[in-house]
Length: 354
Image 1 (cartoon, one colour):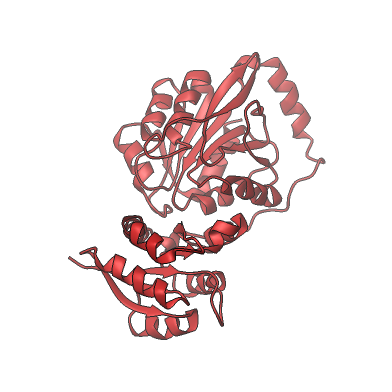
Image 2: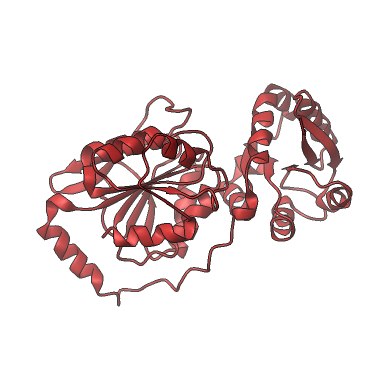
């Protein structure tokens, strides 16, 4: 069995030592090097390139985010960010995800040794997950077009049509996980302002989804919001489930809206794609389009099958563009998928669903 080769890059000698000790307990992981900053890391990586990088953010000579961008541009390598800065600010986490990080682990400022020892299994899980990610498929979408303005005259026509056909409003439901932040940006940033209303679950920790939605809203013609109960699902709007809470589609009279609720983990996730997809199957039926994209595990596969069984068209992202093919593969295996499409084509499928 080929072991997963790992390099640990952190300016703290204690963190390097404890992290290495924790990872070496796994029989399938080999810590081939440690480094106190990215420049030392590059020297060691040129001698033996790792399968996974475990990377701090705040370091001398070069910060971790800059190093990550450099690596992803020159030699894409799965990277796990392990930093206390991700606890302090959501923006750091979003920057890391946007730069290509596959996993984010937040370590505390105090008691780092105890934390890393107690979290050894989580660290091992993150490294194993990263090793299976195909980071070469990240970040190669065409640049988005200029943001549309109110000159787009189709919005009024869409509103008029919705008023006339209140029983056939269309809604698009999307579920994704690992690699999904960049996949969603690649799709949403290229959609016109006039497109079906969207409800989205991206597996993401609490507090981070608001920043993620704000970031997307800045680069997209569609309106992107972190969802709250009562928000309407309307053309030209994408609602992202808040981290730590489930989101369900509801109908209020002639309108779709969402309900955000607490509840147990479903498929080890909250929000869960399965919860969203099931609600969409029950409320919208064949007037919904279901899309499952890159992600680890099987969350969403059964929910997509429920959508498929009530007549909703369904799409899975093709393995050729997935960072992790787990969620789409499981949906395909269950017979839940009508079309398997690469990332660059999924946006056109959404536009056609109007």
